[in-house]
Image (cartoon, rainbow, N blue to C red):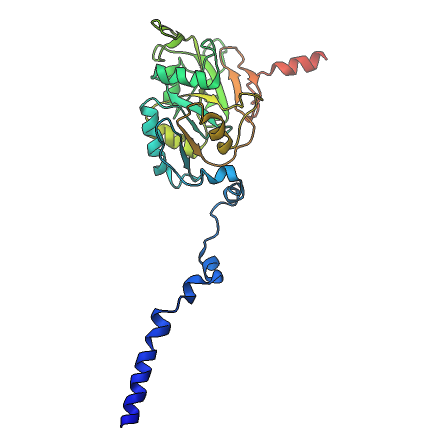
Length: 299
């Protein structure tokens, strides 16, 4: 009986040791590696190996005069992350968002101070007009006089043709309407001067993240493509955009992955037939004229 009690006591005292005190399961390198999940996007994981990208690897709130950097799913599964950037836009910020072509620097089209800051960031003269990113054809009808429509005199119905191109990588130049805010033509310590615009470039990008920003904003955005100030080339990596324009006062960057250096196709709808003035990602349509075609024919 005594021997049995001793054996039982010894066993009870020894049992808790491996369960409570052994650190082995928490220090094994093999156990830690197995707990890691594979990266969700292969391209994003590959780019993150760059030391420059590591500092933007998680969303961060801006400090005073700082930069808000937001990584999002290009497929739009986490558009809730865009709310902070939209609030900044509504308060007069200048930021960068993805489109279906290259990245675009944007701001509120009704905020003249924000537009002036955008001009200074891009070093653009007041004489150069900006385009706007639109949510739908309704926005285009609001801020322009619309697309040329057919009539009994044989004018083609270009509105019907354009509907097959949007949303898409096209910028259409149209006659501006009175609803378009006036453009500041002189900005400085004196009283600024404003003038109405005669024409306007409009876009409806085929990009989920871009459209989500526009919907949350509830209005079009002033837009210009992001270029390198020195090389005058498009910057397609959002990390490089942040490094380039963050120190200059850019307020936020929405990272939806690296883009291709292929801008939108610009079509002048003020001419009949509509004429391509810059060939880009959007394919030439049968109803579009291309000045280069006539040059090749002469050659």
